[in-house]
Length: 223
Image 1 (tube, rainbow, N blue to C red):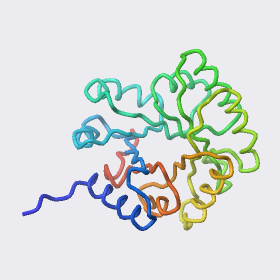
Image 2: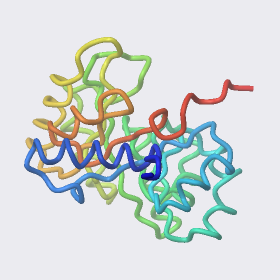
Image 3: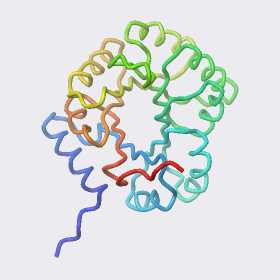
C-alpha cells in the first residue's frame, strides 16, 4: 500500500504541476509555510519533512516560538509577512531573514536605521495595494516609484514586490499586474498567492507563495 501523501507533499506536487504548465522550474518558487498562530508542535512535523521557509505575521509571536526551533533547525529562513509597526523595526531586522510588508516612507526610515545599527541587511518586498484597499496596508501604486527609490537610497535590499489581492474576486488580474510592476521596476521577486490561489499565482510569475491552511489546516482561534 502506498503511503498517504502529506499536506506538504500535496502542496509541493501542486507547485510542480503549476510550474510545468507555466514552463518554469519548481526551484524558481519558494514555498513559505505560514505558521502564524500555530504552536511549535504543529510546526515541527513540517520541519522534520524538510520545509525550511516559514512566515509569521507578528514580531512578538515569532520571538516567542522560533529561537528554540531554530536551535534545532538552524537552516530555517523566517519571513515576516504581516504589517510591521515602525517601532518594531529593530526587532524585525534581528529576527527575520526577509520582510514582505515594506509599505511606507516611515517604515523605510525605521528599517534603514535598524539595518545600519545592526549591520544586518534584510531583503524586503515592497507591499503594493493592488486592490486599493486601505485596511490591508500596502503602498498605493502611484507612490510605488518614490518608495522604491527611498528604499534604495536607504540601502535596503529590495527582493521584489508583494500583494494581497481583494478577497472574493478573481485574483489573476492582480497577480498579472504585480508581475508587470515588478518587471517595470527591475525587481525579481513576486511574493503572491496563498492557499486558495497559489497555483494561479505561480502561472503568473510568483517566486514566493505564502501557504498556511493547505499545510496546517484551519488556524486556531485567537485567544
